[in-house]
Length: 183
Ligand SMILES: Cc1cc2nc3c(=O)[nH]c(=O)nc-3n(C[C@H](O)[C@H](O)[C@H](O)COP(=O)(O)O)c2cc1C
View 1 (cartoon, rainbow, N blue to C red):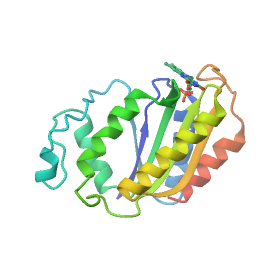
View 2: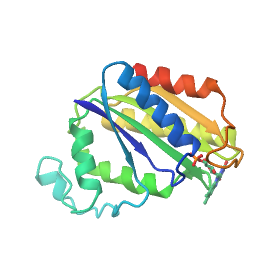
View 3: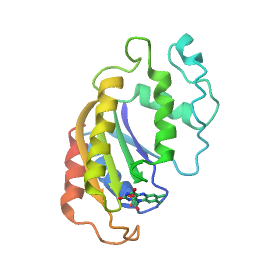
View 4: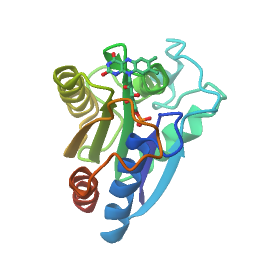
């Protein structure tokens, strides 16, 4: 049983990815296995709203890169998920992937086991109020619809600094590590 870490930023060495890797280190420090998956470059189709998953126990029937990731999340103990703010909302790659969680929904609740641990990480250029709002809403959605148990919600402002720059101090990195340890 393991933790799945999803990183949507296409920037190798981006802040969201680095924070997610720290959270993964924390989780490993607590004895968890962690698999890191970057969405960039994967073939991930839009949820077709075909409802096939409603009649097969909640398994997505699309034969793309997302389907096996969804199965891994289903059997995991927790999720680290890291995205960017783009035009005031969660980035499109992550949103398209998250829409595929539709296959985890049933008429009344979800096929996922209650209480999978959740760490969310959301980065933005500068809009602090908005990133806080979006991050809180994202966490609330995963808790309410899919019964995840939040153990850490991290936001970070990059001020449009280059991905590999050292414009990040130990505080958010430690915060991510500690959140990972709680998984
Ligand atoms: C298409 C696009 C739209 C963006 N829109 C916003 C925005 O509305 N508000 C904001 O604060 N930053 C915005 N940004 C900046 C990104 O949020 C920022 O570069 C990103 O969080 C850095 O993440 P990373 O270091 O994890 O790759 C935008 C960036 C792109 C590429």
